[in-house]
Image (cartoon, rainbow, N blue to C red; front, side):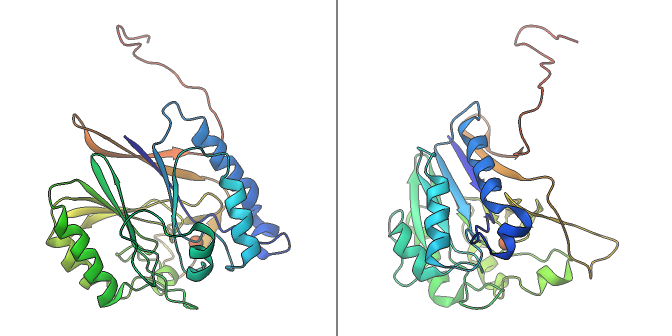
Length: 271
Ligand SMILES: [Fe+2]
C-alpha cells in the first residue's frame, strides 16, 4: 500500500503572481511525472491544500487538467488559499461519509483508514477545525478503532518557530490534540501549509508536514522573524504500509531523476 502526498501546488492564472514568479503549473507537471515514474505506483494521491492560489474557477480547471495523467484516485482538501465551495463543485463529494458544508471525508483503503479534514476559514490565512468538525472527526475515529488511521489536513497542528507561519497556524490545535489523544490507532497527522518537511510528536502520534511542489520555505533558526522561500527542493511524501513495516514515511525529491548506486544487489555488496 502506497499513499503519495503532494501539497501547496498553488496553481494560479497565467498572469497571477505565483505563476509569473514560480511557474507553478510546470512544477505540478513535474510532480505528476514524478509520481507516474515511481518504481511502485501509488494506490492513491492526496493533495493537502493550497491546490490553487486565489480560488477561481479557471485555477481549479487548470489544476484538475494538470492532474489528469494520474490514473489512481486523487483526493484533495482545502488550504487557506482554496475556495471550499468551488473545490466541492469541481471535485464533487469525495470519499465516503462526506460532511455537509465542509470538505471532510473518509477513504477506507484496506487496511488503512484515511481521514481528510478541512481547516479552511474563508478569507483568512489561519486554520480552524471548530467543534462541529472535531465532533465529526471523533465519530469517524470511534467507529473503526482498530484500523490504522492517517489524518490529512492543511494547517499543521504545531508551532514551527517561524513567526509568520505561526501567525497563520491552526487556532484550535489543543482541542484537536485532545481528540487525537483518545484514539491510539492514528498513525500520522499529515499536513501542508508550511512548504517544508517538519515532524514532531503530537498527542501519542507523529505529526508531519509535506513540502510544496513549487516553493520551499526555509526554516531559518537564526532569524525566526524572517520568511524566506526557495525554488529548490520540491518533494512529495510517500507513506508506505505493510504488515512487516507498519507505516513508513519517506521524502521523495521531485527535482528530476538522479543516478542511483546499488550498494547491495540482493545477494552481495557491490562496494
Ligand atoms: Fe501554501
